[in-house]
Structures are given as structure tokens and as C-alpha cells.
Image 1 (cartoon, rainbow, N blue to C red):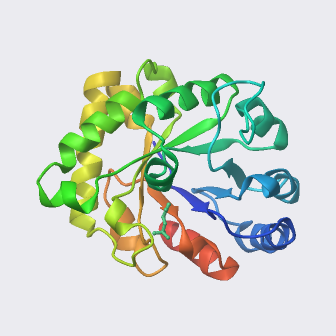
Image 2 (spheres, rainbow, N blue to C red):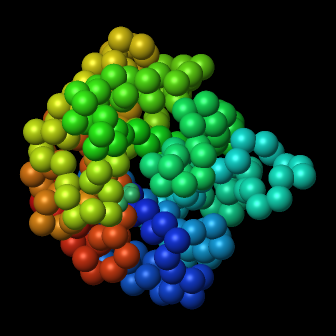
Length: 252
Ligand code: PGA
């Protein structure tokens, strides 16, 4: 049985000081909540400090990206063992901003994913179509390709602990969320593919969360569908009370 997961993706926001301030208040606001997995993804400099501030709480920390090599001459990159050591338990992979601005492809996402798993990090793998692809009727084909190639070489056992995030690119940061029916169609399709490719049990355990302009007032209709297991939240995760409110709504 999957319990919902809500992950806040802070993107390039918050200094270490601001991030820790948020974490300390947030842990108190959500400490009594059960039946939901809660994750915060700060920028790299704040990962360790936020993990410390959330120690022994019900909130886990994610990084927003990783490089696949363990160490070496890779200026500017951060490895999975470093992130695990810093206190991260999850890592977001293949976010559309990384795909469009920084050259991530399904192939690099796949390498990052295997590195993450080898270090005990849980990947949150982002997939989603652009508006042009949706308008051309290609949404499900695009999702198939992204899921298949990003998860190449993954075992059913590994898949069962992973998180996929369906994030239509046109809904990210635009205030225009997918309708509950659009999200449900994509999630149900992805879950069906996971059944085919990884087996029924693994597909049932893998989380598929929705992302794209999720707010406290639209999380309920989006996340009540059987195949929508929570949300990856950008802008609405930056304000502490609003984000705590959003988390509470998903289990209300
Ligand atoms: P948004 O971002 O909630 O601000 O649309 C979602 C995401 O990029 O993960």
C-alpha cells in the first residue's frame, strides 16, 4: 500500500540560514502528521545543514541533482556518496529545468539514477511532455520513451522503492496545473507501462507523484486519484506555513 509523498523542490532559492530557519519551523508544524512521506530539496550548499536541522524528524532531505562518478576531476559536480554523507536520502533526477537548461537527457538521467541507487539514495525521476508535444498528441509516447530510457537496467526490486514525478513542462511554474483528468490519464498510463516492464508488484509499490503548479487549494482534486501518489511542489514549497498546509491537505 502506497502512502502519499510530498516533496518540496526549492530550486535555486534560500541561503543556508534561510533554509535552516524554514526546516526548524517546518518540522514542528508537521511533526504529528502520519501517513505521508515528506521531503524537502534544498540547493546543494544547504543539504547538510537542513538534514541536521531535520534529524530525527518525519521530514527527509533530497538533493536536486547528482553526478554519476564517485569522485575525480569533475569541477562543479557533486557525487552520490557525497550527498548521502551530507544527509540526503532522495535525489531529484531529470527535472525539466535540468533537461532544457543544462542538457540532461534520458541517458544521463539513467547514469545518475544508477549512481544514486548504488549510494542508497532514492531517485525522484521526472518525466513530462512539452506543450507542443501535448498539442501534437504525443504525450503518452514521450512519457514511454522517458520512462523506459531513464529506467534502463533497473530491476523490479529497485523500481519498487523509486519515485517517478509526472511533471508536464507546460505546468511547471506557470500557475497552469494539469486537470485532475489529465494527470490521472498520464499516471495510469505510466503505471500500466511499469506493470508491463517491471512486474505487477513492483509497479504497485513505485510512487508516481504529480508536479506542476501544485498549491494547497488544488492538491486534493489532483492527488485523490488512485494512481497519483502525492506531489512534487516548487513555488508553493517556499513558504513554510503554506507548505505545511499543503502537506496536511493531502492526508485530510
Ligand atoms: P511549480 O514547480 O510547483 O513551481 O510549478 C514544480 C517543479 O518544478 O517541480
